[in-house]
Length: 149
Length: 82
View 1 (cartoon, rainbow over the protein chains, first blue to last red):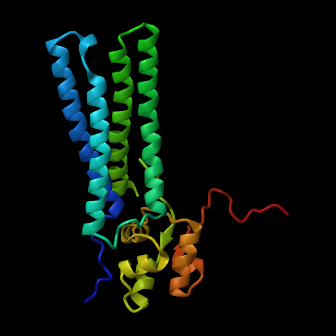
View 2 (view 1 turned 90 degrees about the horizontal axis):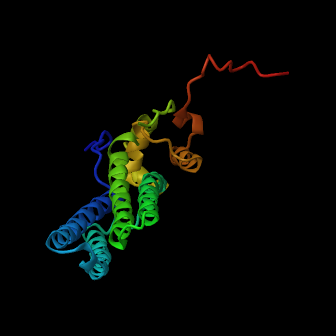
View 3 (view 1 turned 90 degrees about the vertical axis):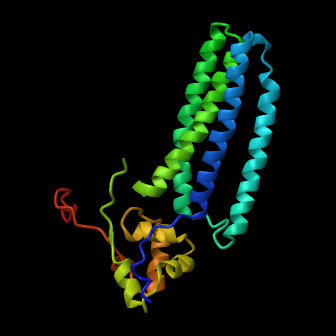
């Protein structure tokens, strides 16, 4: 009868999609890095066709994210697209964390370029920064949703 | 990690007085998620001034009946010039 003291936190739409994005990134990039490490072990780095793999992976990631978002929206239509000011603030805080990872990745790429490292390493320093940024952003958002605000 | 807010609120009591309005209903009327209402009620999130006014309007009370901020003795409040 009295739902007034209902403080069970529940999970908002945005929080659910953050979890989905995090799992998606972890799955796809684990697959990618496993393939690349395997290739690096079995032959010279200069011969690794990471470009093709990278393009396929980004495509898979984009499609998977869209499908997952549609699934969530279909399963919980009332909550879909309801993004409020707290969601936006949590997103911005996540972006701030992500910005650091991108910066560190860019600086690492710059350093590798200055010592004329193989383009494979430059590309992967930049990629690592971007991947880390997305993962840290999702984790920071989930922590913010759960704890600090 | 985040400094706790010193703003307190009476939203739970006001909801109870308003025919036991649920958090979900309040959320819908002010256009935020239920999770945000919970966070505001528990003092974990300070809403924007606009959302604060919307909450007060729902209950038909002035803003300071919904949110309170403690007087800070150390800041010398009340010792205004002139």
